[in-house]
Image (cartoon, rainbow, N blue to C red; front, side, top):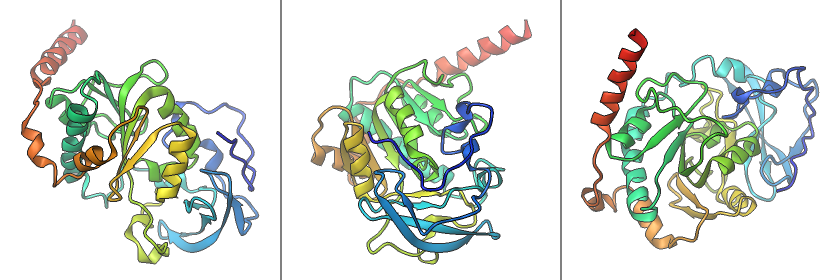
Length: 301
């Protein structure tokens, strides 16, 4: 994997970054550079990225977007506004949070039962409130959560420890568009799990301007990386994984060869729902409840 070189250097703070630099938020990005150039290096493939668009985010910051000449990845200028954008980990306009988790829980369940039936452990990377982790455990899957920025409300006690555990499947839903330094997170994903099941909307063709596509989410300021199929293919090549994409926002990067057509069918929620009733696993709900009660008693003792 080539080293990512930046055209706009940033002075690193005295303290080394902690684990809070993952999920796309870094101390490198607290201040806007004084001089912004009209092209830069692509954060995915290191090719040249040209100035593509301008927009106002968070109703106050005028920023610039760049688009890679090679992989067509779209990135913002150095995102100096992230502290402000992440004052709330989940933006108030994300009203689809629950319905999205209901949908992807079925897709992950299907993936584990039919593509990786031997997988023992799963981790939800950037798992927010822990809702998906809870839903998967209710379906009988040993799932943990990793998210240093959001309160884990629904899966307490099942937090994954960074660089201390290994998983067969990693999920990262609505995470990739938040990555300010993608390869920092991708290297963590590579260490944590064999297979990655992710969601992020693909940039349409032709690439829309910020006022033409809702996925820029200008009012939130958190979507700093917008992905094309070619950008995902570049990642798959760099990290030695097979890419299967529905081109509808769900993508699988597999460390072992899989049948692409079968996987694509399973990842399409509507067409494969008939399979959900089969191969059901015993729920972990009661076991988790007993563990939670035991932990409460331990703390009270």
